[in-house]
Amino acid sequence: MRKLLACVMLFAVIGFAGCGDSSTDVETQASLVGTWDAQTFNGQPLPYTQTETSGGTTITVVISKFSVTFTPQTFTVITTASVSSPGQPAQTINETSSGTYRVSGSTLFTTEGGVEDSGSYTLSGNTLTLSSPGDLVATIVLKKR
Image (cartoon, rainbow, N blue to C red; front, side):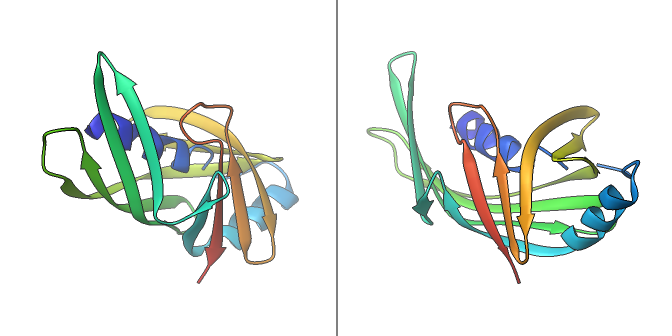
């Protein structure tokens, strides 16, 4: 159950770590500083429901809260979700993850636990859109507080 939630959270932070090379990257990184709250996952408003079947077991994750806070070089993701499978009571999970990030062009890089990942992003005013070619979550739209 936690694997699916971890995958969703990993995607969500895909794309953030350190300093960019150009002045535009530095300006963009400065624009990210603050707290961003998820508005939609794949066009669905929160709470977002993701169901996956693996090895004959169906797991459902319902994300009720997802936020990312950026400082000039670090990020923290806070997620509240309910995880359930048939015949089992739902478990509420409050997850926090953090690491470093950097911006390069339209790509955000994250490093968490020594593992770097990346994804594309767009930033328009107080709206941040993260996109990834994964099959769990493809697009997350966040609004700045």
